[in-house]
Length: 74
Image 1 (cartoon, rainbow, N blue to C red):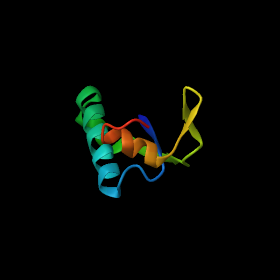
Image 2: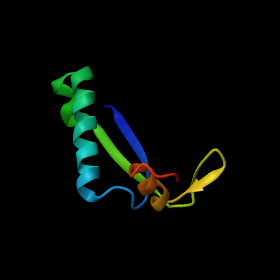
Image 3: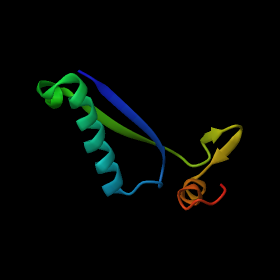
């Protein structure tokens, strides 16, 4: 049974966006592995506290990701 883990910074995605991620990732997995595997395909979202996630040595928080989403520098 496949298990997909999605790591995100806490407070970046709304509950509706997280549900959409779960649904779309599940659909992608089923497209590859077959419909019979849907009931045993697990998708989980782990939220990492802001400041506990870094890229290139720079710690990121939800506000940084929201700025990127708007096309602004983080």
